[in-house]
Amino acid sequence: MSISSELNTRRIAAVARGVAGKSIYAARAQNAELWDVDGRRFIDFTAGIAVTNTGHRHPRVMEAVARQAEAFTHTCFHVAPDEGYVRLCERLTALLDTGAENKAMCLTTGVEAVENAIKIARAATGRPAVVAFGGAFHGRTQLGMALTGKVMPYKKGFGPLPGSVFHAPHPNEFHGISVEEALRGLDTLLSAVVAPEEVAAFIIEPVQGEGGFNITPPAFLQALRALADQHGIVLIADEVQGGMGRTGHLFSINHSGVKPDLVTLAKGLAGGFPLSAVVGRADLMDAPHPGGLGGTYAGNPLATAAANAVLDIIEEEQLCARAEEIGTRLKEALGALAAEPGHAAIGDVRGLGAMVAFELVEDGDPNRPAPDLCAAIIAEAERRNLILLSCGTRANVIRLLPALTIEAHILEEGIGVMADAIRTALGTVRKAA
Image 1 (cartoon, rainbow, N blue to C red):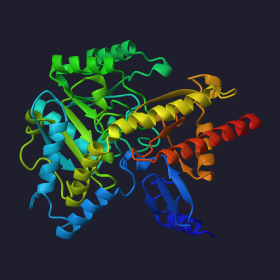
Image 2: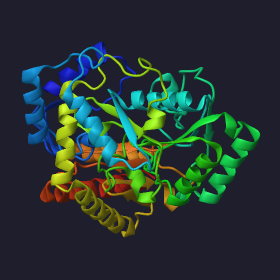
Image 3: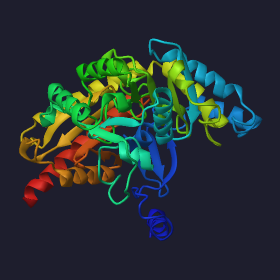
Image 4: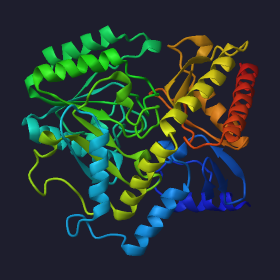
């Protein structure tokens, strides 16, 4: 029996079933490669779900954390604040353009950032309601689930969920939901379900993550900004998956030219260490009373040291430009695959920067999702030592999130493996049919 098989047996016995995971048990990783406990080498096209944008164990990140560990690992910012936290907030506030002075706060997880952004919006406006959008993912806590627009596996069986959360349609060109149709749905919501005067915030992902890497059209974000201004609503951009250079800009909302009021950050912020942040207009950030925000582990010194190093790396290694190069190459390769005879199942290829996905459907029909084919491609890629992940509300989208520091030859190797996996899985499915 392999070590991986033994660990899998132990996991099934000891770890809660709801904590899903692959059967790749990591032993070590470097940049865009990972080795399991049995010595198998994998190319990693997931980056820990857009966490290690700067690659596994970037030397600058590791050095920064080691230096901090020599000094202290935890004091709790509420007990003894530290310079690393303050410096990170200074840098994040300078990097975000809200059209006003900014402030920031640090937390630990993406959903903590989301919940605190909602708390800030409610405190600033005195209003209870929040509007999120179909296909959204904002986390697994009770409020995170209420905001999320995807049932499985995130919401089913966990109700009742918090109230005063409403959902409007999200534009999706591939599925025939235009910007105009989505805006009509939002207008209906604000006319017939919840009054705009009761809405504290709109929260939206400029590029949806778990929902399928659907790009929010700039025209829709611009319309949201206008509605928010008209009704005194806070516009929150959830940048947990799409931020930190992933889409070719530090913040994915920058593609639209829209200035948000608040943004939530996590994942790629600290290069593999648990850290999140809320950044936004100082007048909003200062609305909650002292003690109303924070947490024991929020802004851990090791994580803020890593995040300060990540910001240096993104700038000095020009990772936003590199994200564009990677994304162009991925979309080029996927477009060529989609054009091959018999590959109509690759119904759509989309993405911004190095946040790229392809949606799998039956015979090119957007209304006939192909989740089994999606799973088959991922399994075949894993057999060939490439790690891929699915997403989408119908589990039929494969997302590609290689490290922005991936070496060119590793990227090409991974693309070749992916292409072979797609062709093999498509051939198997056709034979079975």
